[in-house]
Image (tube, rainbow, N blue to C red; front, top):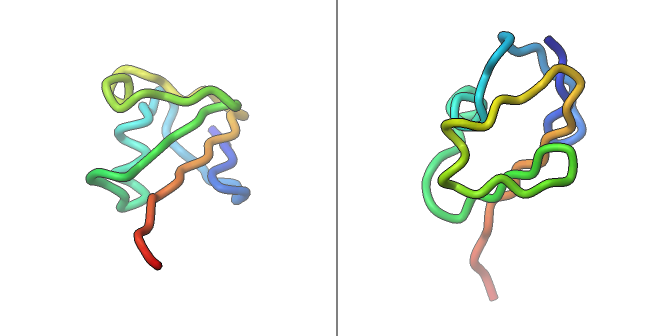
Length: 66
């Protein structure tokens, strides 16, 4: 299936969860926020939220600076 992640089309396996997508992207740890089709997915829902074909996913990483 095709989804858009941070503005880039990606081909993913059907039934991939947000958590699995983060592993594919190499993103993990604290400071990660994910929205699927404009809806924020809480960290507790990453393992159970399935990304559907055509979804628009935004993955944001908090950065510290000054």
